[in-house]
Image (cartoon, rainbow, N blue to C red; front, side):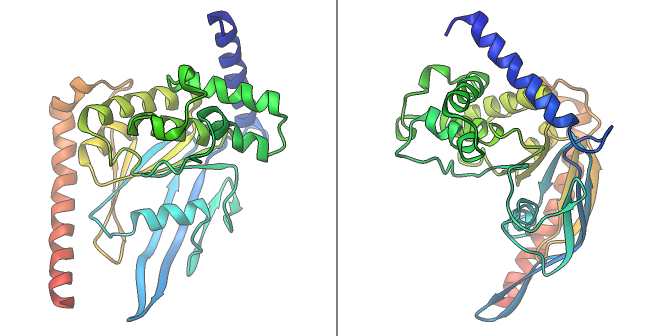
Length: 292
């Protein structure tokens, strides 16, 4: 594909995304999330287990937030409730005013493990969502190629997932999640299994994509540097049962570069988060000792 045609296709995708963002109620923006008084309780062999307790959160359209907390604090469970995979025991979750009762194309999901179809090519993986939504194969393939170009994988459209590196597989996963033009992008520790250098490159690539599409992003991580570098806000959760204990504005300039990691402002936010997480991790250890 020549450069002019690739740029035309890319602009068409961006125009479509902007039209999608303006659809619905006149003047409304897509991607508003409302979590109200949510409890999530699971039945276990030893009795009911409260994973999330009394969680309330509002995410504005186009905002990038990170859910941060110690392992087992319910971050992923809360995200899965927004995705529609988990039903809250009480309370409610709404996206753009509509109650979430099941997964939907308005919410794209990227997991820590790429979850690509191994028997499909990279292009076929990305085109799968549009095809399932009723788009013709020619348009679905065009959308797939455009998003693969956006994540820097245009040359690998005919490759199979097992021939790609971990970082490349995750880029395919991001392209696939975006191919349905979701208003909300949910990301569950998507870079957790990557080496440090690849992780940094993926963070920068994600911010470039987010700047263009302005999806609402909810990003689960246990990495404080990652949370501060990426987000507009950091929502800190306590040790189990997971409660929201802090909602921190990240007032750092955008676009962000890796040089920001050593700035006094970055370090101050990192210390604030570190103090909160250390306290909650110690609480988790104490709970485990009592349980033992």
